[in-house]
Image (cartoon, rainbow, N blue to C red; front, side):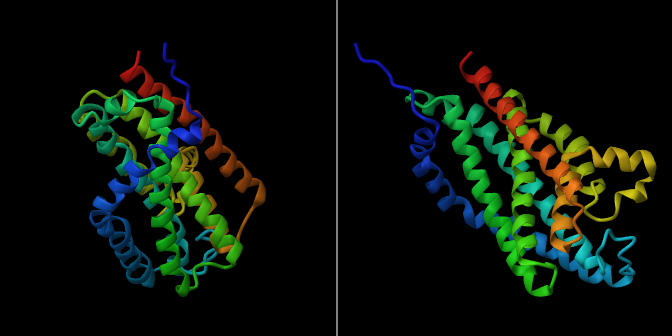
Length: 266
């Protein structure tokens, strides 16, 4: 009687590499505008045009000497969140409900853990390429105070994107109708994008509003990205920001795998 040997996580990811490579080859052109051009237009409009009317006071702008330097690190972190959410909402729903790609994969020795890990690896690649291009294009404008700060800020941007990827993946795995995404975008993603410190200091929201903003994962990423980019780092705060994001990433991984397991296996 034949027996099925469980794959290691690395082997499970490797066996899906060809699938995700083909997916990217067939879809990358459609991501050019949303991943690269639109964010740069944001920077041009908010940082250069609007920023020209704002005084560059480091005491007000969290250490930045211009509004351009203030808004760029936050915008990249916020864009990482949006990219991750875009990759874990309708694409995950499609693979579960409409195209049922995950069902076909589960007919092989692959497990739900392998499917989630491979999909998240693909999203990490998307986040890394998107944030890297963003950072490289903006580097000549002098937004990075140090090379090591630029590297750590890049890692922080990818990290905050992955935090949203695991949690939204788990949400999508439990969602039976795409109508739920309207609630997610209106009550979750848009308010986070506007009020988590990417465009203005959260102290402008008042004491209660600032407290609420600071407990959000996006603010943790925005603050970390900004401190590292400007070389204006308070290390214990950076440690708290990174620690919160890593804990959320680990908990989100469990949430994502259990969600897909309950949906397709149990």
